[in-house]
Image: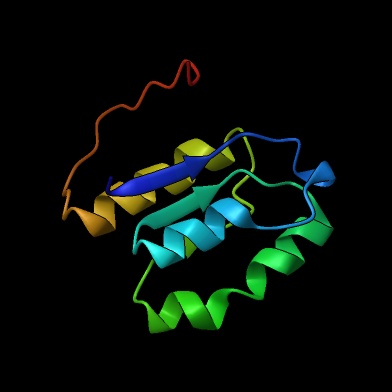
Amino acid sequence: VDLVVHAAGPFQQTEKCSVLEAAINTKTAYIDVCDDTDYSRRAKSFMSRALAANVPAITTTGIYPGVSNGDTLFLQYSYACHLIVRIICSGLY
């Protein structure tokens, strides 16, 4: 697995950042769509661990247009894409 996209909210009811922590522990890039202030503060506390593990961890991207914008930037910079014409997201099943 190269990337975890955590979209399994609601984040307001989550007390731990278990998915983020697992991503860092397995050195897997991470993006979430969190829109909750308390959760985002907890996620930010993992910054030094993510940096030390050299794991990109992007939190609080929002659902729309946040996810599409964040994912596009991640793809562009992580995989040296020079041009992204279109990304269509119809949901995760």
